[in-house]
Length: 459
Image 1 (cartoon, rainbow, N blue to C red):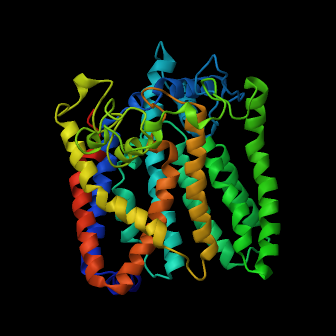
Image 2 (image 1 turned 180 degrees about the vertical axis):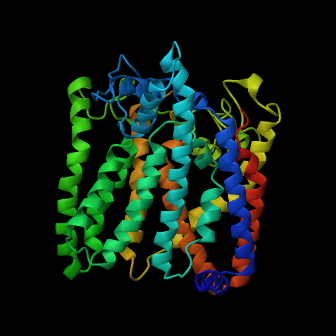
């Protein structure tokens, strides 16, 4: 009983009444959204669903006696690392051993699909937990739930869409949350070289590398931040990370060596690359100020912002530009309120200017945390490298005229890191002016409430 009393006492001491109410409200809505979407959304509706399902079925075909990766003739997602497909493949193996269906593969697809959605939803909730555990350490708080972070991350519609699809990004954000948490813990122990520390950190780095290629963009910053350590700790950090990278390569390299041997490139993709040239993309790709700019706030749905990087990313972050959750672009007859959704998503984009402003200002203004300066630097460099790496990809593999590969899910790690760092900025606002902080929280709650429908399956 004492622990429970202390739990609520800490919340009352550290949070305002509005925060305590808001935490309960947002958690209830998140729980409803997760359950509702699990009930209503099928894996067959996701990005490149047929190719991801074919990948699972190919792996499952050889399990449990053997493990084989698909080639290009088996699925056009052949270049994707295998980790996200292992869980559904195992469920498929179990399913086929308990079924008498004539077509076991087809019969088991919706079953392993639903189990995968549940599993990835669980990973997402764990990701939120570890992000907030890290913030608890940085801010030296007694309570785990950080409302500033929770409201920023939970307003991003991209999260609810991504975790419902069989793909690698849900794993990236899970291992990223673990990475930040473990880095903070090991940093506090001055990168003491212990077997458990080395193995756990190496495992997380390795899992990032075989979740999806975007995960590799989170690794270069570990080298860059070497410069920001105090001289007495720099040498110890270098030793620690040198061992970690050697061990993690044991996990990462087999897949990429196999990809090179089977496809001729470690960065293989399902279309031929162009030589890197900024002119591969038209000017409208880079410049959001053009004739279509008004459509961001009038009809932000596919076809209206063709191949425009920032407008599509913005519309896809807060809403559903491509129509894979909030409206059903490929299955119009199954959707609800299809004719009105463009107007609604326009309002979503308009009022989401507020959280966007907070994210941008937070990213720019947050300088450092005295003790955890290197972690802040790591996050900032990882945001930059993730964006530049994604930009490189879009230039090398242009999809003209639609811009079909411009999806916020692909760099969801960047948005999570921005939300993480911006929550620290909101903490500074709270310390300076509780009135300003209360006003911001009230506005963010209003945005979150209005945008709920963009986070729900309309299939």
